[in-house]
Image (cartoon, rainbow, N blue to C red; front, side):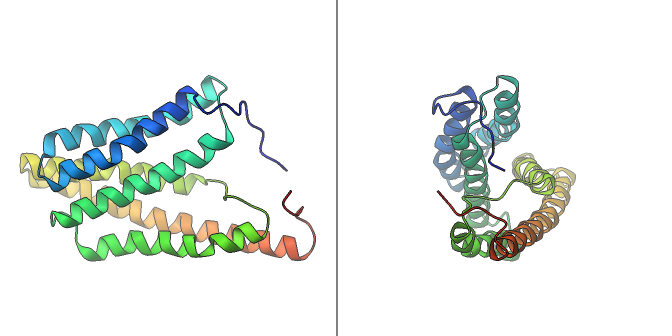
Length: 196
């Protein structure tokens, strides 16, 4: 069944928030790399908050759109990628943690052509994926805050949340993989309409 959207407009309130988050990515990445932790931290916190806000406003204002549904997860992936690479550059995150997150996204990216071949642009975001993204977007500012104020327990709390987020991230990845297997199976049985 096709997804129903409220609008096909590009410049809706939630989409503008997503565009702003997207534009902030190179700014906070440079700030982290340059060691400007306080302004980077502020942007990270605001970006994480608007990640929740854009989805809420899309539903509340009846401004859900196909663009918004694609833009939000892409922005989240770029946000996470930029942050982990910047924190890796600063030796705040270790290589193994960065590879755990990157490998999951690379695996799903490699499967994207198969998804397209079976008439889909994207998989529906599941609640585990939303929880994983929320945990990671919350963890990175807390980790950076712990480094900035030099308080070990704050840094530790950030890491606990990050590890929970990483486990959920992979859990969501397995659910996406299971959904893709279902789509391929349905398509082979003729239960999925071919792309228009």
